[in-house]
Image (cartoon, rainbow, N blue to C red):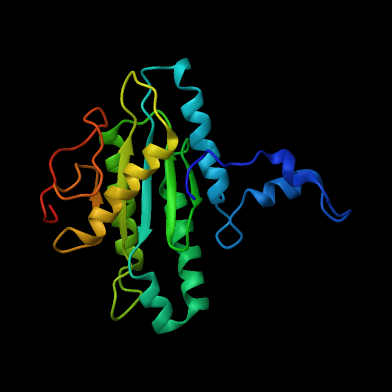
Length: 220
């Protein structure tokens, strides 16, 4: 499952290397998503886990993540075929990467999902990054499909100040906010959300997690 707890170190992948590939190349390739060239899910989870374990070194530093989902990719694949969908993902990954701050890291964590780690970034700044990514993809790819606009829905989560935190919880909060943006807004999708969960949501996070405020079921 998602989270950093099960991330393996690079030492375990060094066994059984063939003579045609150096150890460094093998480890680097193991940390990359083979389709997009971004970090793999395991690698990006490890990046965030490292930030969580070094929390005590800088208690004032906020860390943020963006849970990014590509809207309507399944419908795009069903209409135009998987090869076209794969190329679309490659292009979107490249476009997102170009627009990110230089200190950030991005990995592909699912078929149409990406995780962006924004070190030393508070909630307001992270939201601005997310909104910029959403606008760029809407502008560049929103007309890629006749029936379904290719856009991004992004959940944003930031660590609480002066408190320890767990990377799995931060990712879970960002993912839940992304799902709210996809399913609970009207119109749905093509949304950045960093606020509270709806009142009937199955899980609520304690008040110390930064939020932009109550859930309002419309796209503001």
